[in-house]
Amino acid sequence: MFVPAHITGFFRIFKDKDFLKTGSTGAGITLNKGVYTTIKVGNGNIYFNDKKINLSPTREVMNYFNVGSYDVIHSSDFPLGSGLGTSGSCALGTAYEIFKTIGIYRWSNNYNNEPVKAAHIAEVKCGTGLGDVIAQHTKGFVIRKSPGFPINVEKVKVDNNHYVVVEILGEKETKNIINNQQWVEKINKTSDKLLIKLLKNPTLKNFMDLSFYFAETTGLISDEILEICRDLKFTVGASQAMLGNTLFCICKKEDLNDVLSILKNPIVCKIYM
Ligand SMILES: Nc1ncnc2c1ncn2[C@@H]1O[C@H](COP(=O)(O)OP(=O)(O)OP(=O)(O)O)[C@@H](O)[C@H]1O
Ligand SMILES: CC(C)(CO)[C@@H](O)C(=O)[O-]
Image 1 (cartoon, rainbow, N blue to C red):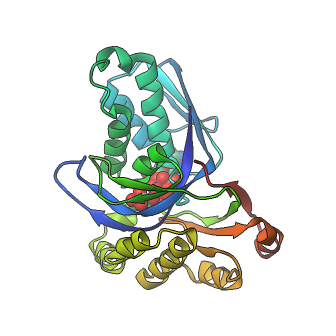
Image 2: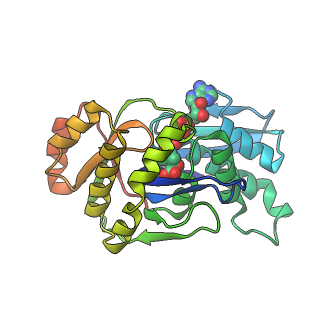
């Protein structure tokens, strides 16, 4: 099962005793690159790009469905910890696969988004994501209007002419930011009015402008990414993928070659709808 990568441009954090009510509002896009997950009968091992690792959100999903006798195999286009929602893709892919293989018998009369809930809870528990799973389930240009469940999103129509160019410059652990009270305050203060502004004018250009404002005003953007964003002013927009040390830029086909000439290791994607 393929689950797309997801880039958050800006977000607001909501914490609650209930994991299903914990999450974020904000906006992002899913990409046509991501994680392919399969499961097979085994010993509870998790593989990520052929390496055996104990990936906590995937483990949480396996525990949620109580399946110790399966191995989970992730094949990912992107590394973990790059702001591309890879842990969310892994959690959701695992939940879909387990649900497809065994869960259907247990929950057959009560589907109720069970795999999405399992993956969202796993991400929240592990501190690896707040809104990625809901956006990855929805797909496309997704505005998340309420945190967690019930899912309340606006899926904005976009034409197929746009490219999303990604440049990964390093790693950043999501939990170090979302579990730090000072960052949470800065993030929530900055994003307070951004959702309304985007909903009034839900275009990719406005999304990128607001994302750049968010990245710069919170101080989450690195100096290196800020400088490259300035060189990419001729595009629809560029900013830092939340929460990673990764630049993303949305451009039209006619600007793609110019964008590629500015970046060192660009990865060209499309919005996955
Ligand atoms: N070799 C590894 N073994 C086990 N866990 C790993 C390994 N490498 C990375 N991880 C875990 O992967 C998770 C990555 O989650 P994180 O939320 O930081 O990144 P992401 O999901 O790729 O991007 P985003 O910032 O969009 O959420 C972390 O919990 C990290 O500890
Ligand atoms: C916290 C986050 C930015 C990490 O990718 C994402 O899950 C989101 O938008 O909530």
